Length: 114
Length: 111
Image (cartoon, rainbow over all chains, first blue to last red):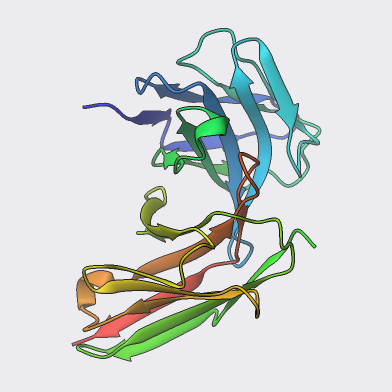
């Protein structure tokens, strides 16, 4: 079955530590997205990538970094500069942005501060 | 102008009743309006979507009503069931641009 796999499901970060969240898709989708979900605030876009080796900042990119070296993979690094990282992180993909097809989501990673 | 406002924040409905969630937008360039359903600990899943050239779309017990002049759209869940208890998000986008999500509605359906 095709889908999006996010790992780990739960992650704990110490002060001053960078952590990386994994997102892998086998849907052969070109575009991938990272969202942050906080209670009562819906989903906010962190970064997105339309194609390999290219990505753009979303609405809340500060304190985060991404890479897109392979079509299937779009890892998100939460850096020590992100002072309030506790949230539910969701990865999504779509075949291509021009198709305006619905985004498919993974089951998320819950990040907490130790 | 990029916001999508969603209400209510939470909703309690008796089994068999109708659940109604409303969204409003400002950007008249938006041309794609999906609704997502999210269960605890899971990612959102597309429920139903509409484009502004139609005023209503129905899929099973789920209906989207769209009012272009009022810049509003709503989700109606007929014959609500306990299994429908979840958080629902509306969203909007312009052409192939990124989705703008509403803040979500937590629906609880009691037997």
